[in-house]
Image 1 (cartoon, helix red, strand yellow):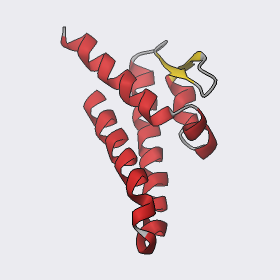
Image 2: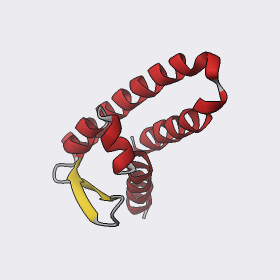
Image 3: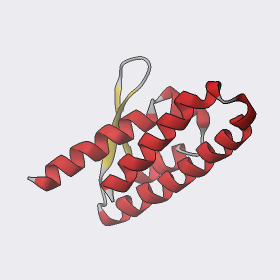
Length: 105
């Protein structure tokens, strides 16, 4: 499941990075990003159900660390402002990598 989350985060970052280069497909890219964030939210909820009490630690733009329950993170993935403000995709990626490393040991 963590690998799926990492793949989805990577995909979101790549499409977002290339969005300005693709004017003719920007509508498609925006629709893709919304759908991908929605699918990522589903994955986060699924992990939240299997790992109750798990949370993602984020560092906001002010440099403050905050922890959010996975279900809360899933809801934030529907809010573009929260995604950007909390650098959510990068923080989810870091969290998933850490979980994979922890479970791999």
